Image (cartoon, rainbow, N blue to C red):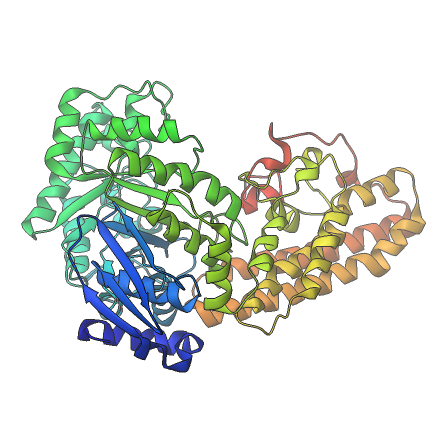
Length: 614
């Protein structure tokens, strides 16, 4: 090996993936740093040695990953028009990765050649003089962020802050201390000096933690901006004008500290749409607003939903009218579910990145959101991470190569990780493998006595989950990272009995079939309770070994609620069996709530109950 700049990175990778460094593999590698027209890596095999030419530091580690995975036995080369290809980790929606957890993820990024990481922090970062920001939420200290920034830089991975300076600040604005800067429950009060004093403290705290001059200032989904306390204080102003005035003042703060701001683009399109629709192709944005954007901040076009390459190309052009340097944010589907939706991820990021390639977008990142409690097992994304990284370098990804990389790097079952996604994909019940459905979450958390969404379920699902549970039995759970599969396996086990529990009980009640009900209260429901407790223990073990402890109280309340409601179900059924009392919960018509039936993703609250009091 000829370049000292790679030594530290390889030492880190050796600690994380020691099996890849067997047979003194580094002694067979020679590195040459070259300047190519496009970001490139080239591997030339000469007898038993490999000559690696690379342009970006992290690409040398990607080349190593290809060689270690057996994908460069002959001459190999690839290039990308992307200067930046990264990941955004959501650490604001309940789950905050430990420092070691972030470092592990950085290692996993490096070996596939991803060169940017941002941590999405609404309130989970230290702001000097603002102890309520991140209070009891696991906020990163400035020292912790500096440590991560330095760690990532050893691979050539850029980190920069990603905060909010307008909307999505309900975690901060819930405290009375911030009533003077509140417009709505989640939006800061624009054109208020105290607001910008707070924002400046936020930005200064970020500036001191990172070496990069970039900063993501958020400003997405600020619905109702200018229409809350702002309206009472200042009267009506066009939302476009409020947004533009606010952006100008935030950018002035950034420029004062020599920072280069970027922002989510959706509010411009929402305000220009008659239906407040971000993806409205007929949205009209005033020319003066377009000009002001060019002068102020880089736009970030986020889109995790569209599957049509032509739509992406059209919408990229609309962004280019405001900012030729628009950055693209696609998504690895981790939010609102327990396991990544890998097929939906492929179906959306593939046309997205191919459109970026064709239109000349130079910077992209894939978001990994944690909406509704951050229940998702982060490691479930690793096959998708490899696919995304390969897609950054090629419009036609070889899935067999992705599988080979995953199984070599992680010594684990690609097929097992893919089949785990079937907890949320049931084609035989109309739930496509690339839909947004989180049907396992819906069925797991629904109250079996009330089951408000039962009318959307038109098929028996017990057998689907029974077969899925049994399919995991052939996987060695002690190999590599296969142990993470225990969680979707346990979910499948629970749902092999719980998914049809309400309708079984309801039918038996209506027929006064006490024999079935006795079996339910004596055998089936107690088994489900035991299985829930096992899942709770698995999830708790995962949380405390990967994440800061804050936030698990939210998850634990869900498990506790599920178990206690099942115990109440036993009590209610026993009362009916012994006393013939009327069970109002099991009477009345079951209604279909969602047009897309089970394909509609739901939150924990909506899965649980029809009340809005949670």
